[in-house]
Image 1 (cartoon, rainbow, N blue to C red):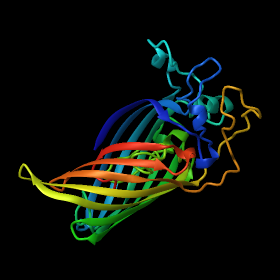
Image 2: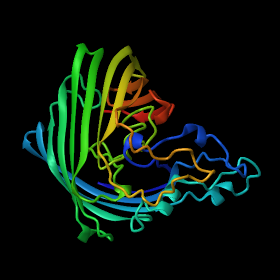
Image 3: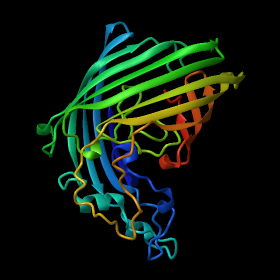
Image 4: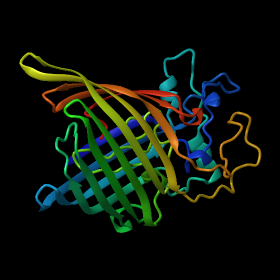
Length: 343
């Protein structure tokens, strides 16, 4: 069960379809003609009420399980309130230039999606799990299939859609109790209907993991900016080498330190169709030189890096990961502090 209310004054928004949406990091670090900082250009605000109940039951012991559930997403989307963020400041003031605002003006984001909406998702699927140890498996697989349906009659909008989620994780022992290798592959795509833009970024997975915001960042492609990879469908993968460098007892508790090296990648596999006919042929001077590149080929967005992990009694694991994007068009670096391994 989950009941959460999440507020983000400046949530990452880069547009749609991966590399078709041009991210200009030099513009983001620049100032407009009035000397105001553009660093929130690729952001909008969001308030999200999320309520969900997920259930699992045995089919063949704990190995094969059914899953079902219902989830409510209430999203309220708006421009970043730069006046509030600028209040009390005399310098380094923020510009109200906004990609999200420009998309609204040009009709790329439809008027009936502009401020968000409420959707209820019905879920069903299967989980196959043979891991030997959930916090840090050395053998086994953890795979799942989910089907989602968000009907319009359970929404305050006219939108309904179906979605499929396929995720496979596998673990291998390299040196017993000391070193292991793990990988994860996931595909999440639309089966039918029309998905509002604000519902596309969510990355779904079964308990005990939680639903996360889009591909990029701490939980999917480390080093790449969050929500950099958004479309009707996407795929991502991770490979990670994990090795313990110290095992000891601390205050009569088992304790170990491990290092990891990883490569992550993700890409849009189903493009989101949008109407860009309202976009001007010549962009205003205070906007980036290019916002869309409709001829761009979508290829994997890659991040790589390493981490250190501190584990107490095998079950409590504090992870610090440092990721780097392979291309500046996806970001630069990210430092992520989380509980447990990524997968």
